[in-house]
Image 1 (cartoon, helix red, strand yellow):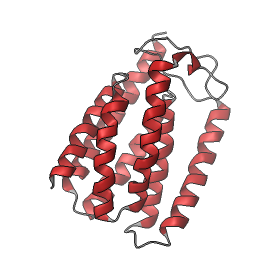
Image 2 (cartoon, one colour; image 1 turned 30 degrees about the vertical axis):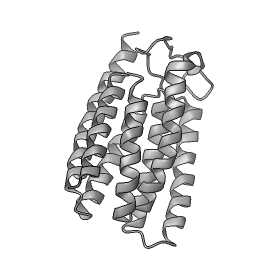
Image 3 (cartoon, helix red, strand yellow; image 1 turned 90 degrees about the vertical axis):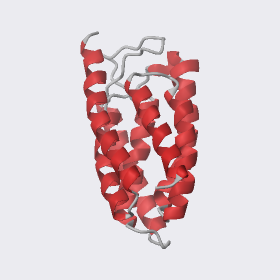
Image 4 (cartoon, helix red, strand yellow; image 1 turned 120 degrees about the vertical axis):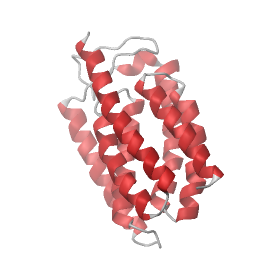
Amino acid sequence: MSFLEIVAVVFSVACVLLSMYKNVWTWLVGIVGIVAYFYLFYEAKLYGDMSLQIIYFGQSLYGWWFWQLKPALAKNTVLDNNSSSVIDNDFIPQKLSKLGLIYTILGLSFSFGISAYLLSWTNADLPYLDAAASSISLIANWLLARKVLENWLLWIIADALLVYIFISKELYLSAATYLLFLILAIFAFIKWQKSIKEV
C-alpha cells in the first residue's frame, strides 16, 4: 500500500458515492483519483488501465459539462424517448433505446479489439483481462456521463474483473476498493432505476 494508492482510493470512492447520488461534483473529485491511478497503474505495468485514465480525464470534463453546463442536451436519439430529464443536479436518468444498445455493443467490441491488440505488443500483465476491464469501464463511464441507467450494469461487470486483477497484482487496497465499488454499483443501479419509476 502506498500514499498514491490511498489517494486514488479515497477520491475514487468519493467519486462513486457522489455519482450514486447524481451530484455533479463527482466529475471534479474523480479527476484527482484518475491522476493518482494513472501513476499507480504505470508502476504496476497495467498499461490498459493506465491509458484508460487519460480517456477518463476527458470523459470527466465532458461529464461535468453535460451534467452542469449543458443539461438541456440530456435527450437525444440514442436514449429512450419515453424517458424525461430535469434541468438540475437531481436529474432523472435515461434508459438505453434499442439503437443505444446496438451502439453500446459495437463500442464494447471495438474497444476490446483495439485494446487487446495493442496490449499484446507490450509486456502488460493479464492483457486480455486488462483489455476487457478497460473496455467495459470506458463504455460504462461514457454512459454515466450521458446519464444512462445501464452504466451501472457495466460497472458491476468491470468492477468484478478489476477485483480479480488487483488481487493478482497484490494491490489489495485497490481490490478491496473495487469490491466496494461493485457493491455501490448494485445499490446505485437500484437507486437510479427507482428514480425513473417515480416519474
